[in-house]
Length: 186
Image (cartoon, rainbow, N blue to C red; front, top):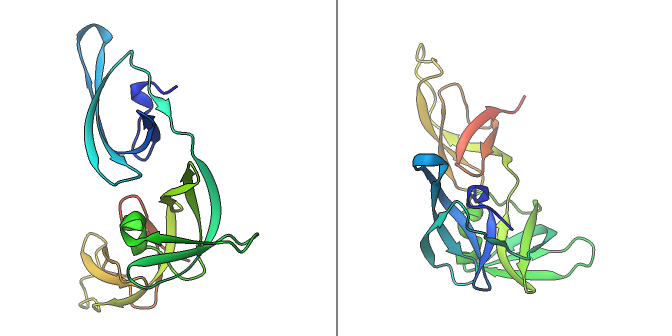
């Protein structure tokens, strides 16, 4: 069983028999050591988002989910296709279930699918991914301080802010939780 303070972002729990993922977490400490945890939970089956408040002594059931390592094959815009590299079984996921993960997927990438009652409920990305910069403005000579940020388009089509010294063709690490630049690959 989870305590309310265990419900950090992306934790998967079960409420009334349905799996939910925490998408926002906030904690208020009250007098005499009590606390209230406010979370926004995304239903991993129908995609609805609900706010929920837990008190310090509440117990939350972890969701009985299983993970499977898969390879991303391709998408046709509405459906994403994955394959189990051991059994060669293929999985199809609707674009709305893939959600923000679509901004980071490259053909051939390995990632994890989460299952609940034999249904895919979540696409689990690695914490950081290396992606190539396919387009970014050249920096103005002399304007190379690292505090200056500019837009860069990555090979998946995602546009993020990067430091001025990043050039087209560089491979950079991106934090998949926040969509922020981490570092240039050496």
